[in-house]
Image (cartoon, rainbow, N blue to C red; front, side, top):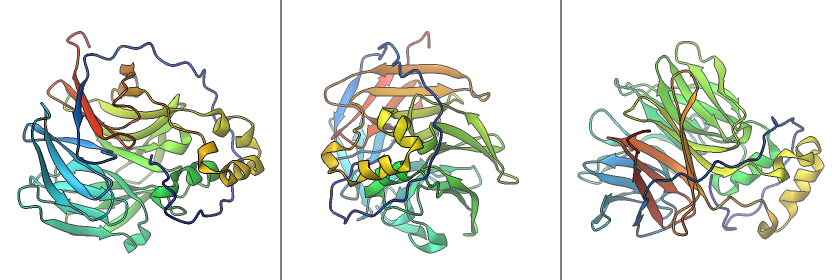
Length: 332
C-alpha cells in the first residue's frame, strides 16, 4: 500500500461488481512485546531486511539505508532515484530491490552499485512491488497493477479489475509471467514448491505452483489488507497487515460500482484511510495462523513490511519516518 500525494493527475476508474467475503471486523487484543523504534532519515520505509546485524530499508526519495539495531548508526548504501519497495537477500550477497519507478534492481550494498534486471516497461512491468529469491537465484516478483501507478493504489482497490501479476526471472535473465488476474499483487514468499503471493484487494494469500503456475487459494478472508510477506528463518510465512478492511470498500459500494466511482471522485481527504495500528501474523505450511501480534504506538503504525530472523521481528511502514522491531516471546 502507498499514500496518494496528489502529484499525478487523477486517472478515471471503471469499477466492477464483486462480493467481498464477510468478516467480523473485530481487532485482536493488544499483545505487542516491548517495541524498539528506530528513526530513519526520510519518509516511508516500506520494507525491511536484516543485513550484517543491521536493518536495511528503502525511503520514498530513492535512498536505501542501513540502520543499526540500536538506531545509533545510519548509512546510505544505495540510491535508486526511484521508489524502492520490497527488499530481498540474494544468495550472492547482493540485495534484490523492487522499485515501483525503476523496476526490478540488484544492489551491491558494499559498493552502492545498482544493476537493472527488469526495467519498468519490459514485460509490461508497471509497479514492481515485492520479491522472493530461490537458492539458485531465480527471482519471483509481483507487478501490482497494469492499470495504475503506485501513487494511485486506492484506484486499483476501488476498481477491483484484477490486473496484478506474478513474474519470474531466471538466473539466465529470462522473464516469464506465472500468474495474472491478481487483485493488487503485493507480497511474495517461497513455500516449498509454491510461491505465496498476497492479493491486497482480495484479502487473501494464494499459492502459485512453481511447475505449472496454477493459482490455489491458501489463506482467504483475511480481516485486513495484506501487504508485504516474507518467509522467516523459523519457516513461517509472516504477513504485514497494513490496515483493517473498510466498509467503504466491503459494503454496498462493492455491489454498486457507481458508488465506488463516486468515492474515487471525492477529494483525497474523504477517501478511506489506513488504520494507525501495528498488526502482523504468521502462518505455517498448512495455512494455519500460529502467531499474531497487535498493538499501537504513536511513532510507528501501518505495517507494510515484516521480517523475522533469529527471534527478532522487524517491521517497516509507508506512513512513518521510523522502522520498528521486537523480540519474539519465548512462549511464542
